[in-house]
Structure formats: structure tokens, C-alpha cells
Length: 403
Image (tube, rainbow, N blue to C red; front, side, top):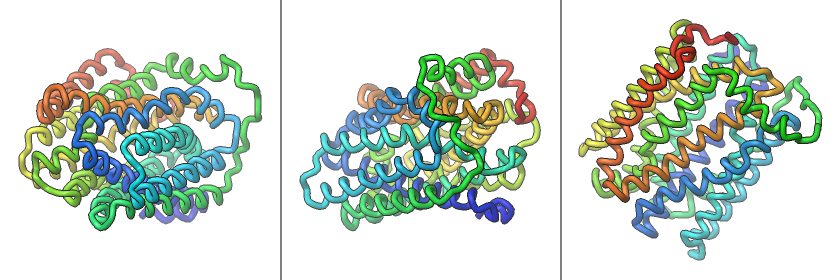
């Protein structure tokens, strides 16, 4: 649980519980979608297409999303997006239970979810700094990550267990949780008012990109996530590891999906209690290298306990990088620009996660699952070392301030 001083702030408490509900819903839904598609097709390429279906709306909507997040009520944008995600969960549940929802229909619904998340994620990131004191943003970021990761531990496991009961059950539960999250966000009250409904000029829409380009440390942090996770992510291949390599069932897939979150949760609790004070840049790069090494170990493992251990380390390393990047980007961005900058940041994150799943599925189809995973881990390490040379201002970041 967050420290009492943060939970005593009503706005942050509502945000925190909404974050748990939406993260739990998304993880349950994701593991169920992956298992359902693989059960219907048995194709690694189709697993990769799930990521592509989520990424394309993010890529197409990034620029207008940022403008909207800086001009309209961020709470209502997030709440509306979660309503759409809840409706998508209802469609998945009904279609799966009745048997009329095929793979093409699943991809269409996943695309709708991707469009909703294209608006939700950057707006949510831009909303949080307005809920806490600036001096506590790193801690709030760590607690937010802990909320997300706590749900991520429970979500995949519940998704696998309830899928074994009936394929429609995790979709129905996810729909309920998305609707609950929407209600919680709608109850948040903040003093900040939208900047005004000014027309979306080309200069205004593109200003987020211009800001990032002028700040090398911010550009380096965002692009590091893009290339490191794009090349090193193996999440899309977990159904293959669970069934064909580690020889377990949907419950094992849930355990594998939960393991990175468990490691991330443990590290989030450490960072929330003991924020990083010095040498933030070197620590971020070290975390990315550890992420790559853990990916390689997972890739070659044939033991479920070793695979889970590697994913635990992977998750712990990833959250260090996430917390540093979030604090650095948000603290160095003016509030009236946070929506646009966060939108560009989320495009990079979406590219690394969703498009990374497509890359993993395609590479696995061409090279094989194990070689693709190991190659991705090696590439992550190479990217970290290269970025240390390309972005010395990021490497030399000491304290996480406006700088």
C-alpha cells in the first residue's frame, strides 16, 4: 500500500485504485486474448499481430491525442477511454461465450482497445503530476508502478485460471473492472483547469516533438525505451514457451506473465521508500543491461522455476528504468506541454511494447522462438551501450530535477 501521506490525498488515492482496476483488467484481458488466439490458430505470427493491432491506433492518433490532453479535462478523457475498454470487454465475453467471435473479430476489438488506450495512457501520465507535490513525484511514480504491477501479478494468474474455467469469464471480469476504474477517475478533483479549447494548429500539435528534440536527455530516455524493449521484449512469445518449451498449461502462462510484475513490484516498493537521489543516468543504463541479460537467460531456459526467476529479475530491472524515465520526462516538461510530450512518449512505449510483440512474433516465425528471444536480449545490451555514447547528457544525469 502507498504511504499514508499519499493515500490521505483523496485525488491520488482515487488515481491509485483506478490504476489497480484498469491494470488488472488489461492484464486479465491480454492473457486471455493471447491464449484464445493461439488456441484458435496455433500461430506465432498471429500472436505478433495482436501487438500490431494495438500499436497502429497509437501510431495514428499520437499527435491529436497530445493536443486533446492539454486542452480538455484529463479526468474525463481517461474515464471515457475506460468506458470504451469496458464495452470492448463485454463484446469479447459475449462473442467468446456464444462462439461467434473468430480471430478477425478479436483483432478488430483489439484495435478498438488500442485506440482507447492511445488516448488513455498519455493523458493518465499527464494527469498524475497534478495530483502530488513536485518533490514527491518520483515516489508517486513508484507507487503508481506498484499499483500497476500488483495488479499485473494477480491479473495474468487470474486470467489463466478463469480461462480454464470458461474462456469468456476473464473478459467479463475485465469489463467490470474497466467500468469501475472509469467511475473512480471521474471522482478525482484537481485544481488545474484545461488550457482552453484553442484550435489545433500544426505548430501546436507538433510542439511535443519539438520540445523532445530540443532536450537531448529527454530524447535519449524515450528512444532508449523504444529500441531496448522493441528488440528485447518476449512477452508475445510466452504462450509458446508455456505450451511448447516449458510444457505447462494456461496456469503456467499466467505464472510467467505474473513473474515480471512480481519483480517490478518488489523494486517499486524499494524505490517508493528509498527514492533514487544520485547517479540516476548510470543506474538507468545498468538496469537496461540487466534487462537484456535476464532476457537471454529466460530465452535459453528449459526449467519453469529458472524461467520465472529470470522474469523476476527482468521486471525489477525494468521498473528502475521506468521510474527514472517517467520522473525525468515529467519534471523537465511544463504542465501545459505534458499531454503532448506524454503522447509522443506513449508512442515510443507503444512501439516498444505492441510493435515489439509483432517483431518478436515475426522473428520467432523466421528464426525460431529461442534464437529470437536470445537475439533480442543481446540487442538490448548493445543498444544500452550505444546510447551511453550517443546521449552523454542522459548518461550523466545525477539528480532527477528540471536540470
